[in-house]
Length: 438
Ligand code: SF4
Image (cartoon, rainbow, N blue to C red):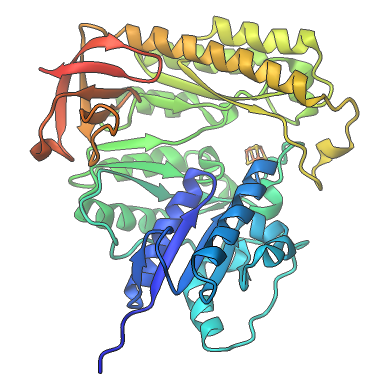
């Protein structure tokens, strides 16, 4: 009699790095003979990769654990990730049978198997900072023929911004060995990926803990040599790490996307100091202007936090004015969310939710305006886009992404999926453009 393989369903909460890790878990379970099924399906095992960057990350993580328990009350539910590292007990109360800390994540599949066989696993101490010594790798992709993928190059952070819990739950900065990154890129390209986005907690600091700040540029050059890899995208880079060398390399590169995400957080020097961000508004402006000057038509995005403790109307006005003036093309806006255990918790002058939301709405509207202005620049021009697997659900049109981060919808064909096509832009909206094949 043949026994049916165990079914595993996995759910991600949070950032692109969590997404990469989830892909690696999927590949790991598939290698062990598990059948990977959607999270909504009835499975024998559920895994939730949790997030704790904000209070809503915590809530979404607990919700996912509860949803898994409801989907199959007899299944085993496993929680891992940043919220699991910080508050394992809260996830156990939500229904998780096994909680795996970030320090043990690279061995998650092994740990789950041991748990299923009844082994008593060592409990981690949530007060201890984990340290990444091994990186999860994606060997044997579960879904072949994908278009764009994430590739982890780094973990952890040494910056200690006063609002941020990440250095405590992900540990100190650790860079993945270049040989391992390049080997991973080759196997992802062989599985069909045409574009890879480099991810990490603080990707710009790649190599810095080994006193080799030029490592990132060397890694980019090595990856650009990988045959069949057409595009490389940098997910996010802190302004202090956007060096002249990196900008010069990007300007000369044929493969690095004209897309830079440079967190700003605040455009006011006093607030930046209170956040322990190590740059001034002038430093930030200088970097963004240099990028826009040397790499024209780049998408340049920023994270902005509103309502940090002590942010008065004049500080917020400085942030808004700086964003208005700079050639930023989109924004990710977050209201400050208090994380217990961070230095910002002890700062006075916490703002009420109404003020934070009002400021967030103002910047979201400003971000939309900037994005629309950017997209309008391309009307009657050509964009080269990589065609995605799924058409746009609302219109049924083909969807593709340009190297400078513009989503284009156009009447295309199924055989163009995972290929580059040229689209002439006919109309611009704030979130995307419409076009015709050229
Ligand atoms: S750079 Fe600052 S905000 Fe980013 S992960 Fe590190 S401590 Fe957090």
